[in-house]
Every structure is written in structure tokens, then in C-alpha cells.
Amino acid sequence: MTSTPTGVRRRRSPRQGRWAALAFIAPVVIYLLVFYAYPLGRNVELSVRDYTVRSFVDGTAPFVGFSNYAAVFANPTFGPALLNTALFVGLSIVFQFTIGLALAVFFFRRFPLNGILRALFLVPWLLPLLVSASTWSWMMNSDSGVVNAFLEAVGIGQINWLTSPQWSLVAVLIANIWIGIPFNLVILYSGLQSIPSEIYEAASIDGANGWQKFWRITFPLLRPVSAITILLGLVYTLKVFDIIWIMTRGGPADSSTTFAIWAYRLGFGSLIPNFSPAAAVGNLLILIALVFGLIYIRTQRRLDPA
Picture 1 (cartoon, rainbow, N blue to C red):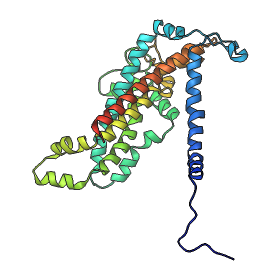
Picture 2 (picture 1 turned 180 degrees about the horizontal axis):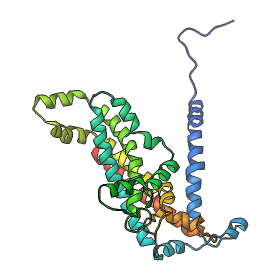
Picture 3 (picture 1 turned 180 degrees about the vertical axis):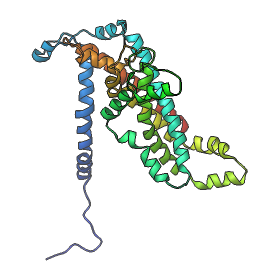
Picture 4 (picture 1 turned 120 degrees about the vertical axis):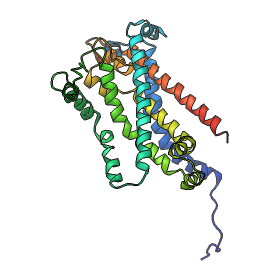
């Protein structure tokens, strides 16, 4: 019986290594194809055909090209929905990021009960959206809500948060900002931990105050983390549906209707659903997210040419 000499190993052939690499990457490729590529392709196909309930069964939906997109652009709801989406997304990101960054800097300092207070701030993020939206809907009720009770106690007066066209978007904005702050807090707090403490010590020796440390050290070094936080927040906020639907259902008079709410109402909000226009609105949301994603990639390449 012969044995293999010590130190001599059987080398794996290039073909075996190639098959091993394919075996490792296959689950990821299958996942992307099944849960991303196919739904996206299906949504595009829905938007360029005239689908009805019957055509879903017999598969006879005629090809109409960009007619559904033209109908969406010509719809009177398009303008208000676009404006509401821009305001909802833009203001949500600004306040969520600003408050989240302020809290992250605050909790980065050591003080008693730091961990407990930081954990309490995560509660809005951990609660199901159904619970959070229902709670805010109850709090902002015109007749029995605690928000109006507080406003009347301080002499401001009652506000019809959920039934007034002037305040409905503000109401869902407040709820969405409250829900999104913990996400920004967690990500930005993690980014602060990656900044070397020696830089702050050197700045203190040079006589820098707290604001100078933040503006010249913290904020610039947090730029990569801030960029991905804002991008993820934008993508998430674009598709927010639960909060708005539970609190106002997009009303009154489309005053809080965003693209996500409009797409749902077109597809499932009536006895005669308009699947194809709903898919077209959904594709507009995907296109907006894709544009900002490409902007993020281009910006990161400029900041980090290597």
C-alpha cells in the first residue's frame, strides 16, 4: 500500500474550481432572478399592455405601448401626487437625517443611562407599521386625540389633522418622520464609532470647540455613511404606503396622495381595477429610485476615485 508523500497535495483542476464558484453564486443568482428580475419584468409588461381582470385569465391583453404612461401623465391626479411625493420624501429625509444625526452625536458621549435611552429610541423602529400608524391616527383624531387636547390646553386650538386638506400631508409626515428617526440614529451612530478618537484629541489640543469638531471632523468623515443612509431612506420613503393609507387613505381630495397610494388605488381601489396604469405608476417610482441610485454611485466614484 502506497501513501501520498508528505507536503504533496492534490491540486484542484480549473474546471472543478469554476464549478465550485458557480455553485456558490447560483443561489444568489436564482434569488435575484425570481424575486427581482421576474417581478420587474412582469411589471414592465403589465404597463405596456391593456390588462383587465378577464385578460389575466385568458392572456389576451393587447399591446398598447406607452399609452398607459401617457394616460398617467394626463390624469388630473398626477400633478398633486407628484408634488405630494416630492414633499413627503424630501421633508421626511431632511428631518429624519437631521434629528437622527443630532441624536447620534448626543448618544456618542458617555453618560448614565446612555444605553437604556438609546434603546428606547429604537421603539418606533421595532413596532409594526400597522401599530404605529394606528396610534398616530388615534393621537391626531380631531375630537378625542391627545394632540388636539394638548393644543387646546396651551391655547392654540383644534386642528383637523386627518380631515383637512391643509393638514393631512403634515400629519402623515410627522408620523413617518417619527418612525424613521431610529434608523438614521442607528446607522449614523455606527458611523461615529468608526471615526478614530485620536483625531478629536488632536483637535482638542489645537483648541477646537465642539462645533468646529463636528463641522470639520465628524460631518466630513461621516459623508460615506450619510450618503448611503439618505439613499436608503429615500428608497424606503418612496414606497411608504401603510402609514398614509391607515391615517388618511390619501385624502381628503388627494391632499395626501403619493405615487404609492395612487398606484394601489388604481390597481385595487375600485370594482374595476386598472392594473396597467397602476403598473405604470409603480414603474415611475422604480425609475425615480434608480436615478437617485445612479447619482449616488457617480458621487461615490468622484469622492473615492480609487
